[in-house]
Length: 237
Image (cartoon, rainbow, N blue to C red; front, side, top):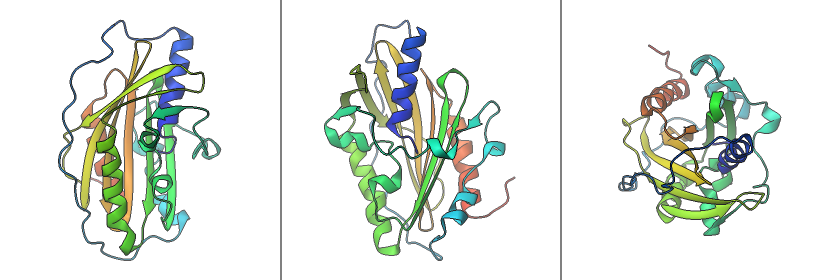
């Protein structure tokens, strides 16, 4: 996710300023499913993508997304910092960060982001790794998730934020895949991100759909399948 936790924090801050929020006083919400076993990367097949322009052309565009989504300008992607936001433990700031930021040994990286109505967003980031780094990258991202099933933090304005992370059932995709959900709550306002991490050859891609309160898992399923087809350069149905 190109903007990672930053998009969630920005949406929460904007919503609170606008006076939007959940009427619920139960910040814990429903219990989240446990994360399943760590998924191993499949053996890489074919040459890695070494040209950033090629990788960029393979990521989904506005024509592939639900109506109402507008692409974020490239200049607004890949924020260099957290804007003063912090998490406890500090390592949980890695959750939803771009894959290439979590593992800087990627050969190529690219990201796209889209904003929709009511603080919704779709973010896709991809990173291609050499054969000897691919498995470690896929494993490391999943290890971080398991260390951060419940954590806290503050945004740039020092507003308190609670995070809960859990498993998410999604169809198998690509050469290997795993999914999770993240619920972020601040002052009664909740944002939910449903995320799939998928491997296609030497490329890992993170597809995330975010909206207040709830997200239709089918949207993530369809986007992930479309992204896999594009990375494999297979025409859609």
